[in-house]
Image 1 (cartoon, rainbow, N blue to C red):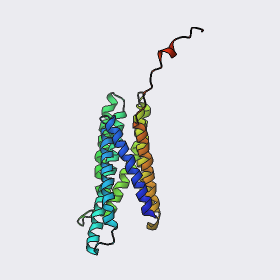
Image 2: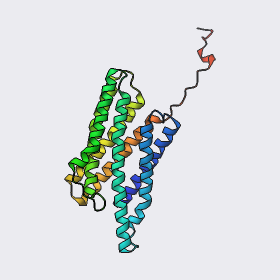
Image 3: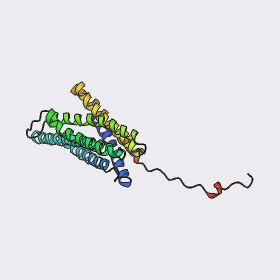
Image 4: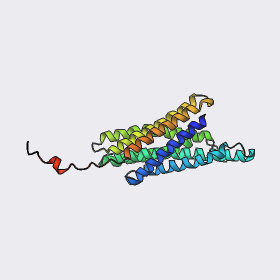
Length: 244
């Protein structure tokens, strides 16, 4: 039953992601280049892992080949998980800097944000045990992803603060920030739930993660959806009535 839910949500997420990509390419992709990079990678990874899933779940192949397929899938899954979470964190940082009003403070804020990125890049190697056999263990990837998502959720509050302080805030920036907040907060809560529930109920945080992603990406679709141009009123409607 869970596989059908995963497949259904995966198809929905893929459609929404593709829609965001198309809308960005037809619209402000230069302005939101880092968002375009994230969406393109997320879509590529989603399609790739979906194609490889039958190999992972195929009971017809030999045990040795199946073990190799499971090992390869796990490495690709966890590596992509960290890459996606790192892109989300960088997205928050870039949008925060872009939303900061012009002035002397922007230079200082840019340095602070750069320092935060440097610290976050180093922290996983200092905080979490790292063993290569020959690939890092899944626990290291999981802890790193959790750290990046919690960090992105906290930094997204800073992004909202920068948007509120900017009187010339862009409505698209606000919508992108809201959608990003839903995605990273949902991911952070999902990783937290995995520590609190038994492995047999892992279905719950996984579905919660996919639903929050779907909600956040739908907000992005709405943000970039083209606004229909209003046709000008006919001159006859603007002219005063001879009986007035």
